[in-house]
Length: 303
Image 1 (cartoon, rainbow, N blue to C red):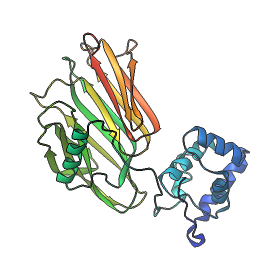
Image 2 (tube, rainbow, N blue to C red; image 1 turned 135 degrees about the vertical axis):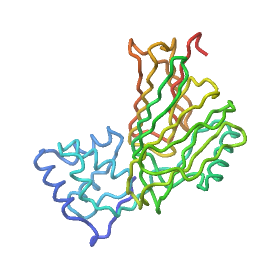
Image 3 (tube, rainbow, N blue to C red; image 1 turned 45 degrees about the vertical axis):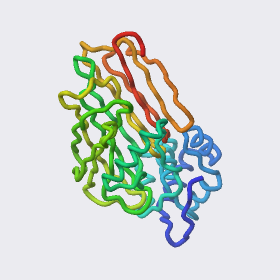
Image 4 (cartoon, helix red, strand yellow; image 1 turned 60 degrees about the vertical axis):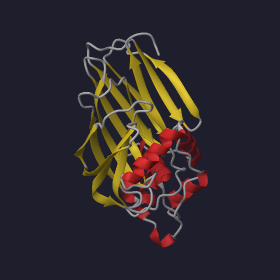
């Protein structure tokens, strides 16, 4: 369950007043809200909703903030109408143990060593709240770039930088080209001796305190001589509110087959997909993670 702040002197009455007015205007019950929050993956106890409405408590933690965002939709409010009234100095409660579902112990070790070389803990105190990654596929069928736009949230302490990695399990590659489009700059790069893990440390434009967010957009490009890549994806170490992968194929390189691969701590699921006459395909996950969402494609028989 999300952790809630209970110090009466710190609550913000405008949040509770706005919530109470919206519930009255919509003519819904707390039970109705609780059921729909649970159905959307943001469960909140009826007692907690009652505390929020009365002003006895305020939302705390990433999961509670996600529930408040959903409340805005359920109650027909403008985006941010409730979130903006909670206040900036929020403590983020438990949101699950961060982890990467890497099946190969050797690759997991290489990942950890790369984080250390970048000067980052193996699991940093941040999470990707919402991410959209766009992959461009060239006329030869290989991915040539991936642009990622992320809403990053601090879960504890203060964040001044964040590491990102590119993994090529079982394939030794030269370092891809990391660059920041907006939101910071790259202070350090590192390639693991295995050639399967490459990373960059992104320095943020401003420090983030608990529950604060910022936007970061960065690009990954594959230089000449890079092995042909018929795969793209994105991984999250903690539950993300939304993950969108959009893969755009060159009209002369439409694949014969496409597989979606979802790797989570509970296992791996492979699902065949189809372009259905389009030249691009997108994958969406909401309230999902930790895990890795991957798209693979080919031009002959399915691997």
